[in-house]
Image 1 (tube, rainbow, N blue to C red):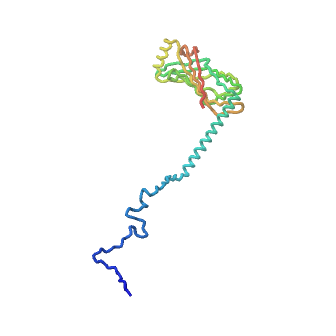
Image 2 (cartoon, rainbow, N blue to C red; image 1 turned 180 degrees about the horizontal axis):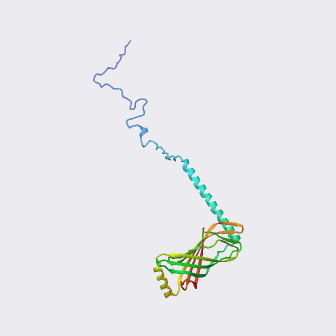
Image 3 (cartoon, one colour; image 1 turned 90 degrees about the horizontal axis):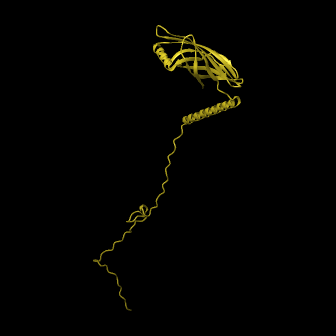
Amino acid sequence: MSHHPKIHPVHDPEAPSARPSAPLVPRAASRSEQGDPAKDPLTQRPERSIPYAPLAPPRKRGRSCCCRCVCYTLCLLLLLVVAVGATIGILYLVFKPKLPDYSIDRLQLTQFALNQDSSLSTAFNVTITAKNPNEKIGIYYEDGSKITVWYKKTKLSDGSLPKFYQGHENTTVIYVEMSGQTQDATDIMTTLQEQQQTTGNIPLRLRVNQPVRIKFGKLKLMEVRFLVRCGVFVDSLAANNVIKIQSSRCKFRLRL
């Protein structure tokens, strides 16, 4: 029986020993030598940014209450103005008011003398005609009136109108006595004489401030004031003489 020879590998001591190769990436790890793919800007998806809206500060109750009070007050004032305007409009349509008319009819100088202390004493009697052209409106002339006579910027005399009631479509003639005294009137006397010789007339101004109450039918309104301004040209200023009125013109204005 023939025996086959057995061949066993023989270890070569000069051959290099083979080392086990280590894995490129350790187990349970997702990194490599190229870096973390989750942090790669090419592979990472951009995150959507949500805009930030700042919260409004809490409202102050005191300020809102103040604004409401102001709004309510303005609304009430507006309603009041509308109501007053509507009332005035209705009264105007019903009564059709007309302005009164005034004129200076007569002017008498009872005293005009320069005293030793250079003061000027004057006294006037004035006749005024007042006309009320309204059919349904009466006028109460109250106390506290004032009428004055002026030469340029110098007041010569003053007085007051009587208290009376003027009815519908009525014409009333009023007599008023005025007196006054002006200090340091030497220059005024000289100016008056020169103007009379140069122009032949002297300009005077009459001012009336009269408190009145208007009566619409049976309704008596609050007190208002009539302001009357009259420009009068007279021929001279001679004492104890009726002054001739060359021309006169009056303007009327109502003041609340």
